[in-house]
Image 1 (spheres, rainbow, N blue to C red):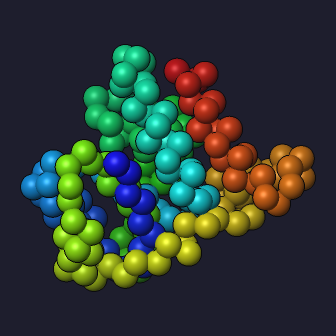
Image 2 (cartoon, rainbow, N blue to C red):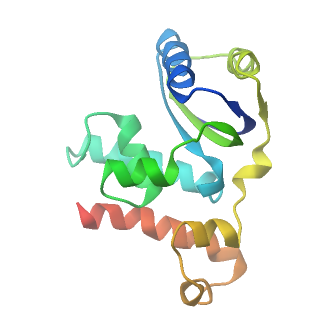
Image 3 (tube, helix red, strand yellow):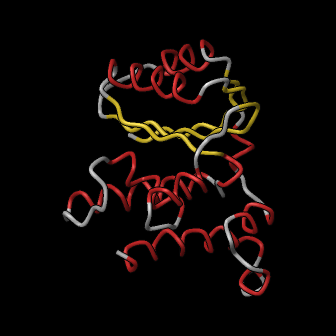
Length: 168
C-alpha cells in the first residue's frame, strides 16, 4: 500500500528528522521517502516514482541499493543521487513537505497522524497539487508547457520520470 501525504512544518534539523522517521518506519515495517513538496506535481508524480522504482528492483535494473533512494531518483527525473537530493530533498526551516509511506501491514492511520503530530507537521494535501511554478522549478521550459493543455501539464513531469529508465 502507498500513502502519500502533504505537510506543512518546520524542520530544525534534517538528520534528527530523518532518524525519527527511520525509527518510526522500522517499528511499523515500512519504507518511506520524504520530498520538498514544492517540487511535487500531484500524487501521481510520487505514485509513478514508487512504481518505477519498485519495477526497477523487480527487474534488477535499479541504480541504488535502496528502494527509498531509487524513488528519489525517479521523482527527480535525475540519474545522479547528488542531483536528486539537491532537487527534491527537504530543507531545514519552515516548508512544504511530501512524504510517501510504503507498507504491506495494517498500520493504523492514527499511528501515522500521531507521528506527524509529534513532529509538529500539519497535513495539507493541497500543497501537492503543483502548478506552473513547480514545472519551472523542475526545469520544464515554456515551450514544453505550451505543447499540452493545463489538465495535462502533470504529464510533463511523468515523462521526466519515465526518461530515467532510458538514462540508466
